[in-house]
Length: 158
Image 1 (cartoon, rainbow, N blue to C red):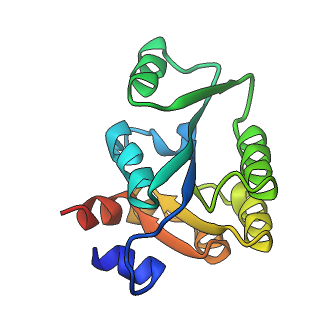
Image 2: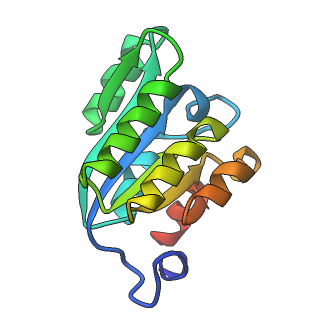
């Protein structure tokens, strides 16, 4: 609760529609040991309603990963190449179309900085979620209204 209060003010718990965009190739890496349940719970901790929870993967994603993500409520988006462009366009569209009050990107890739900046311009609260403290991107942290790690969000649930 202290983390949410720090992120979103005295009320602590944010309200509104949350759209979570997960950069699968950058977050679901062995060195980060990220669990899909932790990512799902991160989205739920940021608002009272999830308007989107998308996991972006490339064509090399295993059927087991796709199945596990769908079983946890993710909309899986498979791209034929680098996921960055599709994710950034979708995040920007959600912000511009008013589909979310909070957009969160789980990544360590600085390519999403412009998308977060556009969301900020539309008055949408932005959150950069790093897979771990050593996986943080300074550029994403600086572009987003709030920056956290999955560990911090998990600890705030306790």
